Length: 227
Image (cartoon, rainbow, N blue to C red):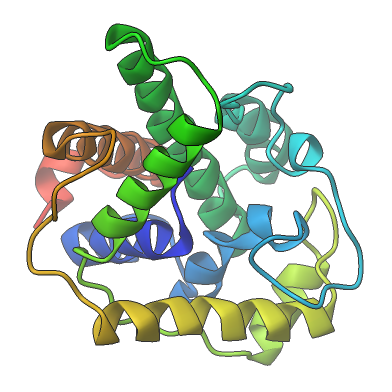
């Protein structure tokens, strides 16, 4: 699945291309943080954490080798009830699930097309390629621990995110940004499993799906607002 540098790149591209207002975002900081929320309690990217929650629950996914998070179910459960007043952290979390779904669906289709069987070698190759792709992306935005962010995290409708875990997650997210800046790649190196075309197609589809969903929710015309 996409690592946090990829999630950050998608959030930054959305804000840069359309602007927060057109996307219905009032607190860009909370929106950016929301793009990390589904992974906080899974136990891999943030340590220490106060509680562990199974990936299937945080991502609304069924058990599978390459799971497909159900962003549509998340939208029905946690976005639509707010009407026109959706918290920014919720919008960010929805975008996270969109990206995970799109990249994982592309990965499933690709390995099936080239007749590669799921397994540890495939997983390692996939993860290495995702890591390389993530480091080609230009990201720069850090999250700040603010009272508004802490309040939105505590009120996150799927499960509350404790203040101590907000602090730990912010540190982890900002570390990814700093690492990307320090170890940026100007071009993709030779890949072990995937292809440049794979990443181009997945990135474009994830960006388009997030943009269309946010713009529609905000009642914004994409043609008029795209910069």
